Length: 318
Image (cartoon, rainbow, N blue to C red; front, side, top):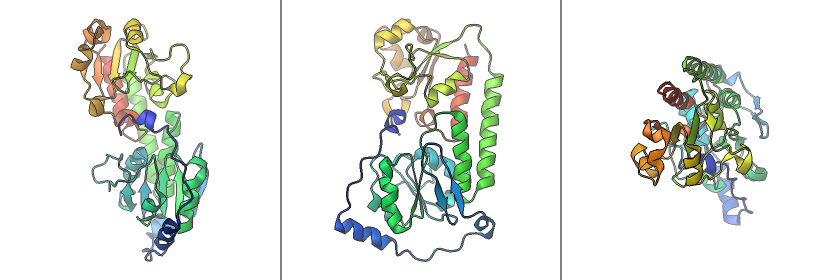
């Protein structure tokens, strides 16, 4: 999901009035074949009401057996809580796990007709501008669950529990949240505490878009007491995703550089060192340029632990 931290902030395009042909297509999707009954162990947990932070509450009447995920982070969570067998389609940006049924569906420009073609009983998205997608899909009897990007780690853990509850895996969701919280807590506790706060630069792409400490990603670095050079006095400016200049980065001279553009843009320690003047940076001279997996560095999935481990290793190596 190239440059996900900025892309995921874009709202879905406004859904226009469906054409007569589209309406007929949606209506046809409502005549699905009868579903097999849910396992008795899960059936007793429904109906359930889920209340995601920053999105409408949704009541799910029975265990969903045909889930469409248009959120790469949620796709990972669905499989982690044991709901993978219930997932029938995921969006084109859902690259993990490999067995996820990837399609050409878009989570940014959601097409309700294409979504309905998979006969879902539950659709999960990151954003639904004005509730248009939910309203349209409701004509087929499909529930839409909006799970916005969490602002904090605690909110991410809450989403793990919510995904478990919504899919009939409440115990697994709660356990995933607990284990992730504990694993991250241990990594932070075991990391050394530098005498002076280390300064860092997190790169989203080679044009120097970055994140501030007010973002979800910035909070991960904050666990280790790192100072973000992108804050520039106001971490909330520009939605937390400013574009820095090369001059600013050279002037700030970060102790650590984290590259979240290795997959999309082929960046690494060598390409960074080859930039004009960058070979003078402390992070470059001391071999503290850290290559991250773009996807792991931009999703609030259970693989957050891997991102935290990468930061912990970098801090330990200073």
